[in-house]
Image 1: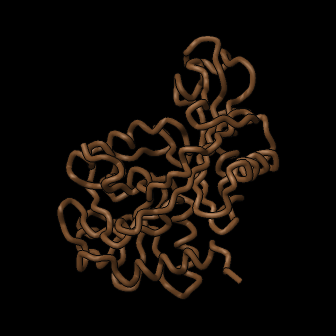
Image 2: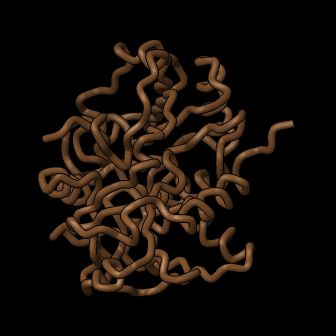
Amino acid sequence: MKQASDSSAQGYAHDARNDGVLVYVNGEFFPRNEARVSVFDSGFALGDGVWEGLRLVRGRLISLEAHMDRLYEGAGSIALDIGMTREEMKQALWQTLEKNGMQDGAHLRLMVTRGMKKTPNQDPRFVIGKATVVIVAEYKVPKPETRAKGLALFTSTFRTSGPDVFDLRLNSHSRLNLIQALIQAIHAGADEALMLDPRGFVASCNSTNFFIVRGQELWTSTGLYNFKGITQAKVVEVWRAAGGVARECDFTLAQVYSADEAFVTGTLGGVTPVTRIDGRVIGTGVPGPMTARASDLYLESVVPVQA
């Protein structure tokens, strides 16, 4: 299996400063090699928790309120009491950045679990004490060679799920189905898995949302069977605001293979080109102008203008 640094939709440029970052664990800060949670923690034992990934650019946490909305909605849906108000949580995020002296080019992983359990079982009534809150802040910027070359995707046999099986809009610690899809893609020589929904329509990738370009239009899936990502929604919004057509619709692999361009969206990478899917060249085989335009519009909408 290829190393993650070789090529990945979640890849980033190496930064030695990450060796010395301080990690927030329940209100305290620890060097990264000393940060710990209990083996009885609900997240470790059962994947019982919710998380958010946030990006710091020029002193601003992109889409902070939208991430807080999703975090607290997700926690509420599984009856998880975070034990902190939204304002307290935002203060913890900024405190983590301040402790690490970070002002730009950072990615934060905010993780909340139901907390430590008396014994490792599913019953939430066995929880002892409060929720566990961890914030890992690292210097991460997308690798420029990935953006220049474009990603290769492989269509996995693992399908995404609907809310009656597992609601992907719930940003849960439980990601095994998506990890299985990614492993399949890696063994096929790809960077990320493209996943279909139970009906056979294109849903998303394993960690990002997926777009195709057909003519002057952007197409992405409806959200019935995917993450309904924050970056995805912003790209649709800014494309329409600029007078373009962005469709949230069902489409098939046949339509993907014949697309003019393709790209994925996510918090870390923003808009990342896709140039090969299932061994097939998409469009001209190089990142295209519509993808670049979508990326520019997105960045203009979320990144503060430098004075």
